[in-house]
Length: 348
Image 1 (cartoon, rainbow, N blue to C red):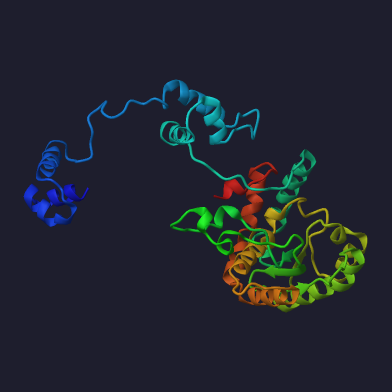
Image 2: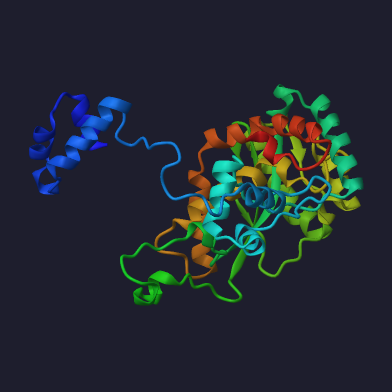
């Protein structure tokens, strides 16, 4: 490509040779490439049929790879990995990748973990998403105070796909301190509860150690704090939201909410199994985990973990929370469009 660029600038073969004397290019080779450029317009073009003949990317192998690599419509998730396809067809893994990319024009996507949605759950998600869209226009959705609980570990699970080490030597020469991501078998953890809305966020509340979040604890310990946060961020004009956890949907909690809250989304209104509809689940907790993963030095115990989480919570940009809240109705529409099933792929 350098020779072609210099030739386009009008340099001759000898001038090109002198410009890159350290390359030790022969004058005959440069002259040949210059002539090729004059005839074809490129020094890279090859004659049709030149090069080593294809031995793996044959029509037969392309058909076999397509059949094995792609999931069948009537059998979702039946696709094989490129390594399994290579073994079945009798070609290399690299050839399978070339066939998929160059011949079949396929793209590779990662599978994402998701909750199981039964037929009954699907129908409820669909029906309740439609109801929430009617009940909560854009102005009303800005008044919703979304709440949730989350467990954070001192040593969170490591995502090995994105946790790489670069080294010029062999793997056995790398120090174990760099190569291994150590994690305690039973990592210390804390559970938090919080709420967010458009224009503000509440406090980060830590659940008492060894406490069981039942109806009594939720009603007497957490709800009064969350209602205080609601009034401080949205004053009296708020709509309280919670998911369908047993403590949330208990008769005691529902009665307490109805007596102390001006408006709320009842247990029969929120779609079941729907973390993809709560801004805390689809943005806030993930953003906090990402920030926590970059903490230096790493917290060594629960107290240091609490301090780190409080700092992360305070510094969480409200602008990003606002964007997450505004996408709530977009996600409701996507849920309806997906007929109550998973819809994350429709948002990309």
